[in-house]
Length: 275
Length: 228
Image (tube, rainbow over all chains, first blue to last red; front, side, top):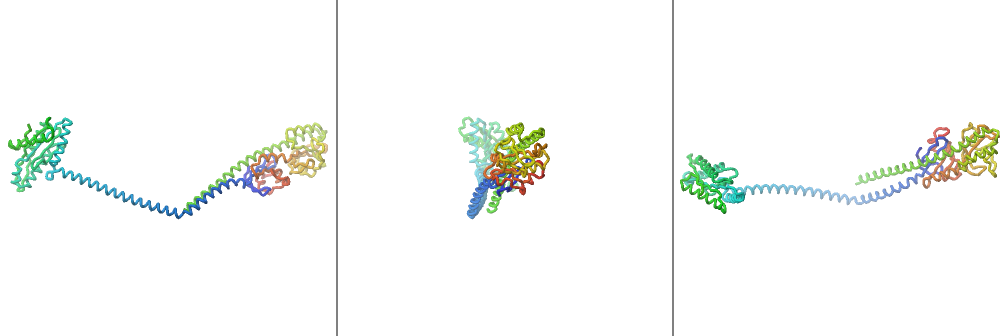
């Protein structure tokens, strides 16, 4: 079999298939006009070409508008990117401000809650924490003890060696208090030379032991006045534990305070347990 | 944008070329299926003619004393053979003078001398048993357009020298008409030397045209042989 196109007798160009017979000197030729063969193809191609031409013309005619639109889109995109960057910068700045505010707030809270001289919690904050511990001890039916300590003859220290020495004495006692109690205990400066320690989960015996350790540690403390003279220090300590009849923490505190005054009255430098 | 349009049109050109090639290929396949079917049909027709010639040649050789032109047994043999073939195929004998006799003899048929016909000249020039296929001609006895398949008798008998089968062109044209593929399609039967033997939808004037200059023949039939 052979395939091709040819013009035989009538001048029409045809696509043909031709081949010789095997046993006779004859050739069979079958042909179809190329025009007929291509007509449908041409029609399809022309339709598609027409549509493409139309699309091309429309695209070319709208070219300027499309370019403008693309420019607008590009500009808008760039503006959006710039806005996004500005926004990100503002968010970061805001975050930093918030972090600074948070730190300032924490510092402020600390300042509000802390005694400037001794760096212990002040009375107001001590009372708030004491109320919380009181309610928890009540809720969980746990022990709670409080120690009230007062520096003996503090007025005489001030009068003899000056206020700076008095301040140094208060700082030293505060340091002893902080070092003697546990991490969970709360120690605060309650008045001029008066300190308080709140001992959660501590019974009467444990409170007295802690008070005695504190008293001994203060007595062994040696500070020097500005003139180099040693300044004797001691404290009187009153200890009280939470009783069943205590309606609020003030009651317990009052008992510890009363015990502390009894220690003063009985000669100072001692520990007295509340009745 | 212009570059995009150029690319788009380039792709379109590729698609169009592919579409055209695909459709041409499909048409090629259709054409070749038709060609193969027709080749088988035509080959069968000529094989039948050659078989009849071989059979009658043997009969004549085996019965040298009997004149096949008037022998009833021979006439019956031809009729039997024709019964299984087509009435469009006619058996004839030609004597040394070129006078033609139809077998079986047909009352009213015109006497004709065919000494100048290519199928007589060709057959006499070849050894007995080899066939000659004539160019199309209009029968002097029947008036029909036909192709003759002739052979020289192995044993001349009663001055008879050539036997031939006339195959009417209509036989091919009917088959071609059935196999045509749409408007404008053509089917042609061409002899190796380029003579157009039959063609669908052709006027008989075109028959016998020599297409030897066509590019088809040297390719389809590159060497002279009994077949191609």
